[in-house]
Image 1: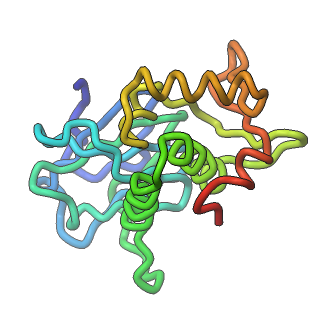
Image 2 (image 1 turned 90 degrees about the vertical axis):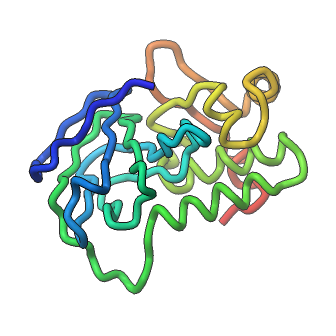
Length: 197
C-alpha cells in the first residue's frame, strides 16, 4: 500500500490527484479537529494490517472526518476524483450526524444482504444516490472502483464481482465509456435496488 503522510501542521487547502492517498495519524492531529472535503470524492479506509484496505466511508464536498475518532493506526484518505480538503477544520455541530458513521452503517447493511447480486445492486445504488447524479437517461457516478474493490465492498472475490458486473453490462444497465473516468447506470437498476432510499 502506497501513501504519503499528511503533515502535522494544518494545511489549507490540500490538493490530491486521483489515486493519491494520505495517512491521517491520530497522534499528530490535535483533539477536536477534523478534515473537511472542499471539492471532490474521497474513499476512507483502514490501514491496519488485519483489515488492510477495508473501506469505511466515502466523503464528498462538505463532509468532515473527525481526527479524534480514528483507530490508533489512523485512516487513509484516497482521492477518487481530484480532491481538495482542509486539514484544520473545526467540527460542525450538526445534531450528531457523522458521515463516516453513516457510511459504515450503510456498507454494513449491504454486506448482510442475501446474494452477491443484491449486494452489488445495493452498493451501486448507494454510491449513485449519495455521490452521483441523474443526467438524462442515465445516473452518473463521477469515478470508478476496481473489481477487486467492489468485491471487498460486497464481500465477494474479484472474479465474482467481474462476473456480476459483466452481467449488468450485458443487460445494458451499466456503461463504462472508454476515455471517461466515471460510470453510467440505468435508473431502473438504481431505483429497484434493495435498501434503496
